[in-house]
Image (cartoon, rainbow over all chains, first blue to last red; front, side, top):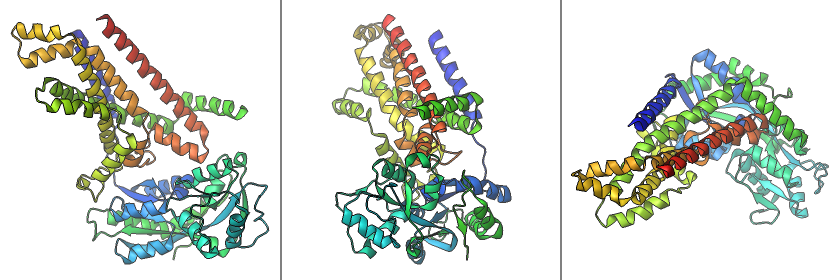
Length: 274
Length: 232
């Protein structure tokens, strides 16, 4: 029975090693947020500061805004940090969340190939640019994932009076922002992106996408934070979630957000807590 | 091409410098997949023995079912476990979603049918004389089955290794139930997917190399066990 003895000893040794590496118990809360905040590196920068101040560890689940709100509505997270103010206010009214606050903003930009086949560079508004892209049948990549950016994009199409659904040049990829930018770059297509994710792509130069339209007030991008309603889900860590929210909107949290820079020294988020 | 070579060299640098973030991701992968396979081994062998011993006609239904579940799509398993563990789901009160435990459960579900399927097949294909002889010599049903397991031990070990190979390279299930939380549920495969999105290919390549290396080791083990089994 030498064989079995050796095998069992081996397995036990592995098990022992595995248990040693197990983490210890600590206070952690779950925050559902958007791919833009994760891809840009904002959380990696501010969460250690928050943890140092309060001893609370924040686990970030980065999905699109639509999915993040859904995670909150199901009670799977304690707090959400997203960017779709109308939807946030609606779910607040429905009682799924409480204590919403504006936290920070940045803006959306329209990016595309530098040769700008639809010629939107000279235009002033996002609505005009979208119209031009549709007229010229140039490829446009849509997030198509119900995220904050996707909702913004749909609202621009609506304002332009165009229904791009089903058009040959309109490609819905159902991916996060960074991947969508990669697809747009490889297909020489236009897309709508938040400035932060675009700037933070490590290999941005090599991708060859240029900002072709920016500065339209319609492209304002507000981020908000809110806690899952503890009356709906008594298990949520409401107290710790509120500590996190209050920290984000405090002077200290706001300064932390303002001082975050990407690898090239760009400021990606501007604090504007109410 | 220059970019690829440069990134690869830098990736080797990360591996040799034993970067902390890099190490913790590799260790978590090993911990999650290792634990899942250990549990799946127990469950899988038990399942194989149950089916092997079974006399009822249900057996004819169970075997194709088992064979089908050997190829369960990881994302579907992930979705199923997510719905089970979600706060609004039936097991929500356990508070397991987005923890390493949830990932272990998902990978366990993926590995168990593989181990059970291969173990069962090898028990059937073992020389029927073994069982017959054992029974004739006065062994009980259970003792005879244990004898068969002993004779097929190398095939069973191969099934365990095959299970490990499947779960450690899997990304769909762990992403859904683990959430890819930095420093907590981020394993090799989900980290590669994220870093490739961000354009930080160096860490992605370094993790990819380790994953390939592990695959190589796993396959070498598989080869050795199968060879030994053949000699026996």
